Each structure stands twice: as C-alpha cells, then as structure tokens.
Image (tube, rainbow, N blue to C red; front, side, top):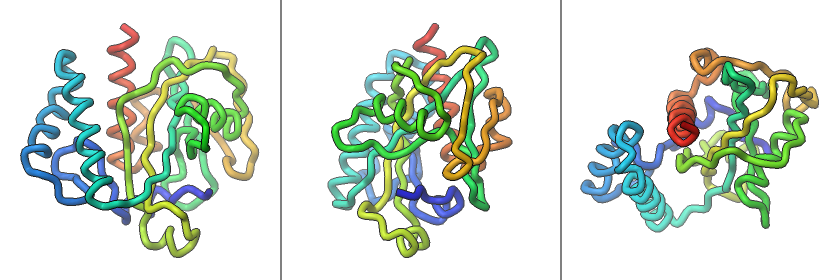
Length: 216
C-alpha cells in the first residue's frame, strides 16, 4: 500500500505515544501527566525505563479502546554503517519531505524484525539476516483525509515500530528507481536536514539514544 506523504501526515492526527500534550483522543489526565514526566526523564534515568515502557503501552491500549480504530502495523529500519555510525536514508519520488528510513507494513505472519529485513531488501537491495536491536519506541498517526480519499486504505492509520541494523562500510545499496529513486548516508547530526517531520525526527533520535545505552 502507498505510504502517506510526510506533509499529509502532518495534516492528519499524528501523535507520539507517551508524549505530553499530544494524545489522539481524550485520556485520563493522570496518565498523560505520568507519561509526560517519564518521557522527559526516561532516557536519562534507566531505572525508570520499565515503568516508562509500561506507561506508553497503557496509553496505546487506551487509545485503541476508546477510538476502536484500526491501525496498520509497520516498521522503520535504522541502518547504521561503520564506525562513523552513518545512517541510511532513502528518497521517495514525491514532492514533500521525501527522505525517510527504509520502512513499510508488517505482513501477516511476520515479526517486526522479519518485516524490517524484507523492507530493507525491497527498498535498498540489502539482503541481511538479523536485527541488532528492537526499540520500545512507537510512532502512530491517523491517515489524513487527503490520503484516505486518494488511496481508500482499510486502516485508519498506522503505528511504526523501530529496529536498528548494522552493516559494514562496504555495504552496497541498490534502489529500484521506482518506489525509491535515491539514497544517502548521513551522520546523526545531519538527520534534521533530511527528516522534516518534527515528531518523526524526535522519535528517531530517541531510538538512537536508546540503542547507544543498550550497546554500551
């Protein structure tokens, strides 16, 4: 299924699970307050990570229960190359905010990790067999009206999970020139030049920090 344009997502109901002040529906104030506090402290306070993760799961469950909406399960792959930790971004042939990481929907019977490896091969021509790290982060959003009118998706939106995959410096990326027409390797500091959606960029940076803590 065609993915929603980055700018279309901004016009839809984008929200970060556990982010203070950005619920898609009304949620109890105490839950949002606790979630926001843990969002601020979580990356710097490892003992609270389990509570932080549980809080995000609870917010997600409440959202699904209240809205009764259907969300497509999807995954985004942070591909890291070499000692410089360059990150792979692919370019979709569209007008607005076309740069993103390889990503796509999770098919029936697939795990998050299997879907990430398949999408990476389809979009970047990289045939790999394992994932280094699966993040607890999620980025969920409702499809905007423009996207729904154009593509008539069966779901109301999608929830992205994130995995980290490491490749050697000589990894050869090949794009199909159709769904993806170019690619670039960038340093973590350069991500903001390419990823224009603020919420998406914030989550990506959080995943990188989370992976750095686990790796070390």
